[in-house]
Image 1 (tube, helix red, strand yellow):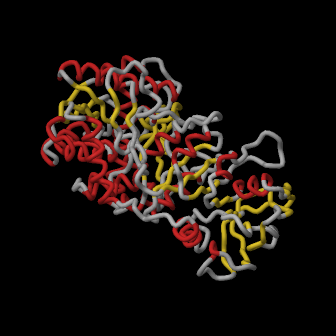
Image 2: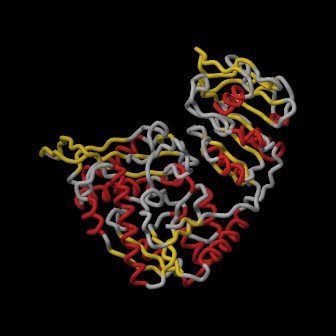
Image 3: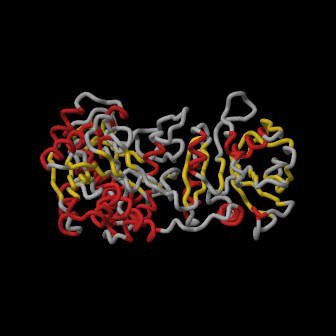
Length: 521
């Protein structure tokens, strides 16, 4: 199996070196919002990959470790040899200080949350910014002694050295997080680094990107036929539109009805793609195949793997029927790659596998073309609008590749799937009726692996429990639970219990990400 990736050699890049922060992807997104390409690599990546990327600057992310302990992550030597600007954030600042001769200590009074930063000395990093501003802190260690050649830039009440820079080298470091919205002027600070200090060109633009991706697809495919698996979600829809512009009728789309879709979705997807987008779409009714393969499987990772492998089995079967198919196209996006530890870290920890990434067998006969592999979700949506995909499709809430398979906790059965489809349909329908659908980023129902006693009319009911999940987020890397009105939730709960006789109780999930993930599995 050969993976075909995107070539970005001709544009300026900012490298985000990941030390394990929950905000690493947010840093990369903030860079791209300034129309500069960013890429994330783990701190322990092969140093030749950093050199080959040829970045204009490097941002060192935060992380959960302490530099006061042995064998914790450190900046690779190649970073200091490239003679390019470096910005350390939180842990990135601490390890920069430690490696350049400063001293970092663990402190009793940790800082988590808002803090007032006072800027003492002028710096290009803080150009045009007030001398005092609110920033977001999240640390238990801090720099106690400046490294040789560094000067103090700013402090807070509990962190005397909250920002510093080297007097001769383009090295900057800050204890707070400019990438989060809680930090005032965080965008300005990052822009000062990216645009002024690194002098990166703003050549990461959507219209240019679409044209270049079309050319890249043509060069990859070389006139061969491509098979694309459609799910009806944003990622596969945008991939289809992009491929359609690049290769036209050389594209064949296969829509796999795996039985784990939302209520009525199979018919809706076929109608949308055939009528609205005029694509060549073949429907593969594979509900029974998926159910058979998933029988007696409860582990969420195993379910994802089985669903991913079954997808590929179906695609291979369809490819044989179609003849001369050389490529399999996928709507893999950048968070899929990162969350599946696809970044080649020696210490990579899988959060969850994605059927677009972790579920692909090595013996798969088709080469991959993945034109969205380095795009974040918001960039994919922007591309979809530019490509003319209907807004109602683009603005639809995300739906996981394994579908309801990761929203049915435990073993998947036909009966459980029908219950969840009905509950989810009621929840989404009421969100739309109450004009709340667009105010939340993602909403869905989950079928829990427990039963609960209820009373309906004069009868006792011992039946399933449904959890409702609704979150607000910008990047889907962090999210907070949506504070939906009590009256609305009451109405949804009443409808679900009254209309679905196999449900006795409804609960509402008030967990944020982190520590929870958005999906339950």
